[in-house]
Amino acid sequence: MAEAKLPKVIREKSFVFTLVASVLAPLIRLMFRIKTDGLENLPKGGYILVANHVNYLDPLAFAYSVFIHMKRTPHYLAKESLFRIPILGALLPKVGQIPVYRTGRSNDEPLRAAMEFLKAGQVVVVFPEGTLTRDPDLWPMRGKSGAIRLAIELGLPIVPAGHWGIEKILGTYSKKFRPNPFHTVNVKIGKPMRFDELRKEGVTALEVNTATEQVMHQISALVGELRGETPPKELWDPAKKGQTEIGNFRKKK
Image 1 (cartoon, rainbow, N blue to C red):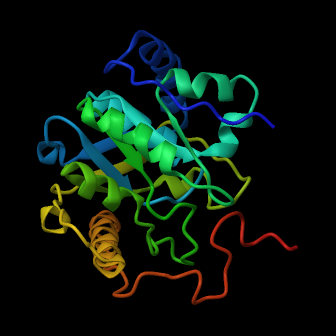
Image 2 (image 1 turned 180 degrees about the horizontal axis):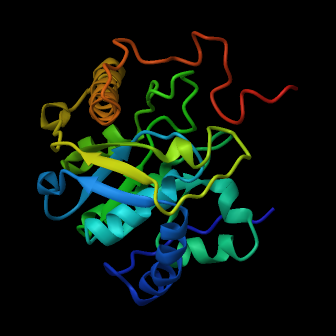
């Protein structure tokens, strides 16, 4: 099986990406509306945008928000299996999307590719949970540390974002697709978070994991504002609940 190709750094709003976006944006608007608040919090230059992961439409919603509302080009750390889909797999690297492996091999090369985009002053989008949330009430769950490690390595800010409303269009792990061009998916951008104090020799795994938890709680707070509810004090942890870390945990083996 051929390996997914790592993308080369493309310029912001490249011709190919703009062409693809011009086709996808109207299609997305036929499925739902998107409203983005907190644009004043966005820093200039490179940053890592992190968000909660509710369903398979999240990347489309955030691609629209980043490109149309934030006026930036999103570069996703996306699961490698997408790059093995005919046509899509050939297109994704050309528009600057980065494959990550969920099991079985190192992600050092994909992270280095993400670093090159960030060094070029561009935006990398990460869903830190690494998979769709397993929380029964769809709150953000425990995150993985890749985004924090990028921020520490490059001294760049992490920008937390929450979204809510997309679960009405497609449920988590559901096949019931209910497009509604009059339904609004809300995106809320929080203030940038910096972790310069961790840019030191000998930073510990505990420090990195604590920073990751802080980011996930901030995302939860933003989702709570959109929902008008108070998020749980403790993040959902699949390992503690006896759930698989990746894939559809609802499927019977």
